[in-house]
Length: 134
Image 1 (cartoon, rainbow, N blue to C red):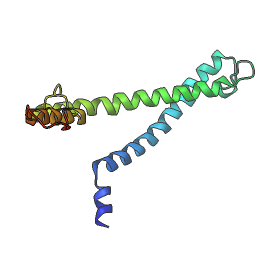
Image 2 (image 1 turned 30 degrees about the vertical axis):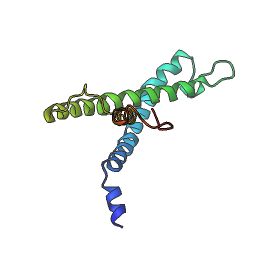
Image 3 (image 1 turned 60 degrees about the vertical axis):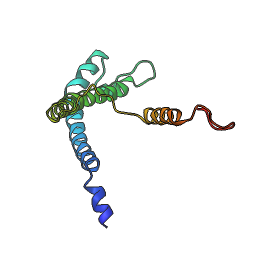
């Protein structure tokens, strides 16, 4: 039970829960906006009663257009209202802590290359035959 509590209190789980709740609320807002404003405008452009009835030949293009618009509006709002401000906040906090954003993180490859160089430096010039030479 202790491990489960620890898992629930991790930052990622809490952030994910908040994201799901906010995403659900945003979906409702964007769907209402699209239904009330965008759909009538596009339906008028296609001379249809509603966007779902807009067709090009036998294809119901209106449904696809509405879904794409919903996605783009949700993505833009999430980016500009949540992602961008959080990135700026993190950057500001990192500056206060003295962490340089230009400082690249050391990768596994970098560590392995350092180990290889240390092993090469430790290897004696007259090593026995059959010993590794890197």
